[in-house]
Amino acid sequence: MKEIFNRRSIRSYENRPVEKEKIEKLLRAAMQAPSAANQQPWEFIVVENKDTLKKLSTMSPYSKAAEGSAVTFVLLANTENFIVETAWQQDMAAAAENLLLEATYLGLGAVWFGVATADTCVTYVKETFKLPENIKPFALISVGYPENQENQFVDRYSESKVHYEGFK
Image (cartoon, rainbow, N blue to C red; front, side, top):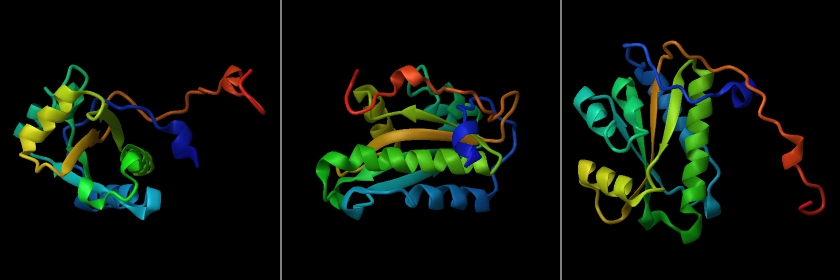
């Protein structure tokens, strides 16, 4: 699957919308992710409003690309769906990666911004969207048509990081 090898973090986008059918395909790909005990904790906010995108771009020093995106997905976990409480971030990461790979397949660029990794970002997203207590912010993924960047293969394989039958 070439998308695994070609996917890159794309932070610069053309000023053009992403079609609704592609947005649905991205969401469908995310929701096909594996999930512990099939708990599927994911919820998504789809943001296309330029004012809200600008606000999301100030969440952290790393989220600036959200402002120029055509759409940013806010990935959230619903604690009411937890069956394996300790696995929600793994479930959400799998959903995020599926969305990123589908974006590459569709000729789009995307970048993942961590939210759950910093309390300040979690609070920012909770306050921005007035989220209820049972909804936990996980990440933002900004998407658009790439401008001056492209998804292309860069070999990251490192034999020195592979260990057989134990850590050596």
